[in-house]
Image (cartoon, rainbow, N blue to C red):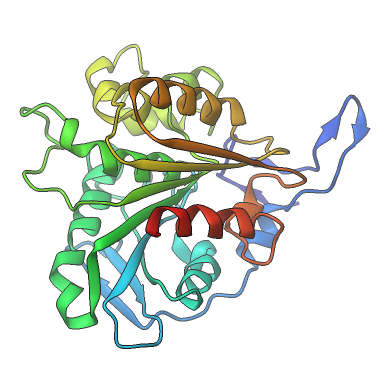
Amino acid sequence: MRTLALGLGLLPLAAVAVTGQAGPRVMQASELVGLPQPPADHTIAYAEAKQQVAELRLPKGAGPHPVVIVIHGGCWQTPWAMDHVRSLAAALTAEGLASWSLEYRRLGDPGGGWPGTLEDVARGADHLRCVAQAHRLDLGRVVALGHSAGGHLALWLAARHKLPRDSELRTDSPLSLQGIVSLAGIPDLRAAAAAKVCGDAVAQLLGGSPTDQESRVRQSSPIELVPLGLRQRVVCGALDNLVPSDLSRRYQEAASKAGDDVGLEMVGGVGHFELVDPTSLAWPAVRRAVADLLR
């Protein structure tokens, strides 16, 4: 059986079980990595490391095109890369949206972890300004979409303007976003670490436990940075046994209480990985979330 570094670390994946009985079959990791990988129109470096690249896909028409920044998951770890979200990015482009799929340095890469992983996602998003004119991109209509650990990074992108002035992660003029879509994201690093989501990857990302890295948690855990000040749509699988949906539910409640417009949709009959499969039952919910933010 294949193993992977998504969800609860390097563990074999099995079907969900409910009260001791075999439950509905959920998508397995091996199926996710086996999805088609449509080629990008352009692969563009936003910095010098080999991981610091983005794949741009452009829809038909003259533009200017609205843009979806796509951030893959994988517990912030290598070897999980953007190959498993290429089908999703291509499906968004087929809907008439440009997709800007980010690769970034992850745990296990030189420079990955704190602060490199977060810096890369910020730098990659901001690099859209450098390519917008040449590729007819509408920078007034940009949303960020992330899955799993990528959901954490997408929400964090929207929170950068709230970082303290002395933060090493702060940038002076972060790219403005119209909204965020979090697919089975990890919006609360303290709770994720306590539940051992992704094994000990949260501690690896922070360079220590949340208790030992209080300042870093406050700068990078989206639930501690609300309100973000823009609309957010959260989509989860009701059968997700890798990233507990309670993380998203508690985030939605906290962000809404703080004044943000945050919608939560729980998709029945699907688990963790279906959310990035455009042929799955979850795809209509993903489409709705993106269209709602770009309407």
